[in-house]
Image 1 (tube, rainbow, N blue to C red):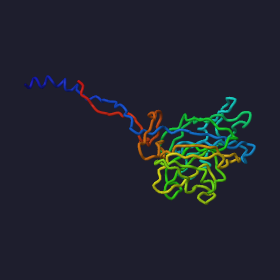
Image 2 (cartoon, rainbow, N blue to C red; image 1 turned 180 degrees about the vertical axis):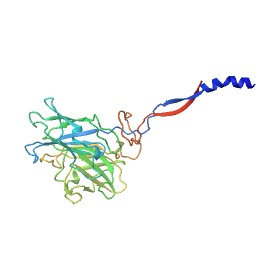
Image 3 (cartoon, one colour; image 1 turned 180 degrees about the horizontal axis):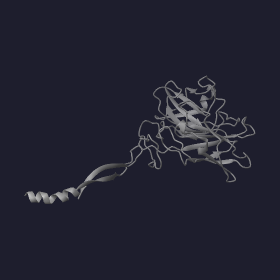
Image 4 (spheres, helix red, strand yellow; image 1 turned 90 degrees about the vertical axis):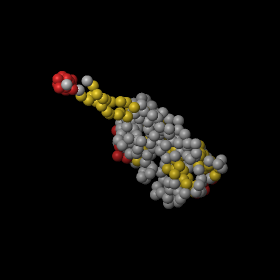
Amino acid sequence: MRGLALGLLPLLACWREAPRIDYVEPVRAELAVPPSRMIAAHASRDDRRSPTADDAIVVVFDRELDATSLVAHAFMVVLADGSRVRARAAVLAPASEDDENRTVTLWGDFGDAIERPPTDVVVIDRVWDEQGGPLLGSATKVEPLGQGPRPVLAVLGTHGCAAVGVRSYWTDELHGVEALDLGAVEIELADGARVHPDGFADVSDNGSDTVDDNVLDLCLAAGAIPRRVRWDPGVFRGASGQPSAAAELAVVERDTGRAATLQDATVDAEVPGGETRPPPNSRGTARGRLVFGHRRTG
């Protein structure tokens, strides 16, 4: 018996634990959040009217941005003749309050508004939303200088209202917002009723904001569940006096893209891919994981 044990010693000396890595397939979350994206860009000013002798393009995103990641060289502007230029400055404006960080104004030499206008804006370097989602590669067409502002996003929340509010984001500054304009805005509720807002918020006319920007809050009574908003044409004016456009938008929940009915909310979105920034966006993003362990080998 002792001889047998001595004979096994060389075999036991060769035994070791080898690392094992098992890949667990990613499972798509039931209500995955779509990737962040640029949703509008508008040629706001040209160097003939701007006090800084630069052109300005207002860019709107569907999520609030991480202000610390905002750098001018991350934005490329394509001109009508095919040339490409980078922005000289990128600032959170015209809306710049802490809960309004979806709009960026780009300053630079963006061609000529008539003969060589800007046509596209592209994010070519790392910019992040507040949840850590990447915006690299996001792009959109640039609306021309003479076009009036239009709403591109309507988000449910209290915002500047006492009870229920719908925050609307526009392609440029809004001017001439007055209480008399409430009748030109119609909101469809979850029960099918159609109402006008009880009031505006985040505007300089009633003192709820110090200056006019591209954000306008629509206030409703407590318990209201807004589903859609419609604006009549020519209700407001843009930075250069252009009349605002007629529009209709679905109301979405904050940062999810889901319909703000609070009932039967669904999302039809692809699983986000590409680069992520720590801390990762855990709001429904599907991703795989690696499980480390050991197995015996001889």
